[in-house]
Image (cartoon, rainbow, N blue to C red; front, side, top):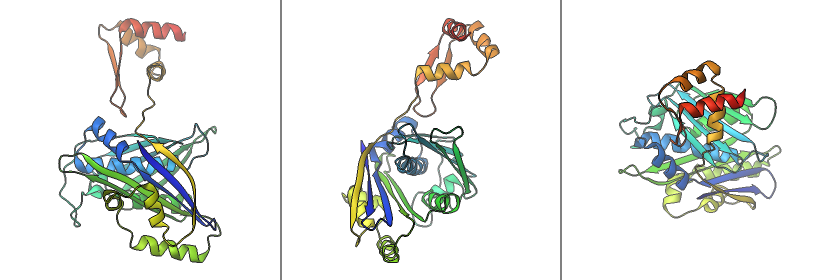
Length: 292
């Protein structure tokens, strides 16, 4: 399992979330088997969702990031709970593109540079909070930064990284997210700007042996900090047979009758973990009778 840490400056002016999500993204790659650039894109979005999940206050709260770009990969979805566990899926798993001008995987090309990032927070209210901002670059970190600036008016720095090997395995993955709090002293702002202006990439830091704590301290170099907490993160799907039964019931009596009267089993596949749930015609009939 990976880990996520949170630090706050001694003056209370800014805090950082830093995460090593390597194991989470390895599991996502194992389940979905996407091409390299899609692994990088989905991994970045999962990492962002995981860190944003850790920002939620309620135990049952969750956050969903939906990235609808005009690129060949189509739409991406990442969902995280308040402990930073995340799951995700992508519309088109296999996309092959040339490397970008920097010789890196062209995540922006796969996602697209036009479209919207949707953030849905379910915090136990009658309706979930939904925010939407236009995609800035499709590189995801910049899009997360823009979301916080535009939708929540919070000055934010976000960095994300996923290093994919030629054999499509994930070498490392992670990220950090810095936010300035109201009344942040100018000297703290300057120190953060200086620290992040020449900070290595997330994958460079992880590859060199740095952990989440090291990354947080490097991003807050020159500042006194207090560690708030540390949590474990993993790729975790919440699907279950009971949830699938509820989904089937929501299709309505007519659809259930058609399934029950057929001579074939009904298969329902979870898009997040690829688990398949099988229901026989008899089980569909019993399910409908229980609901009546």
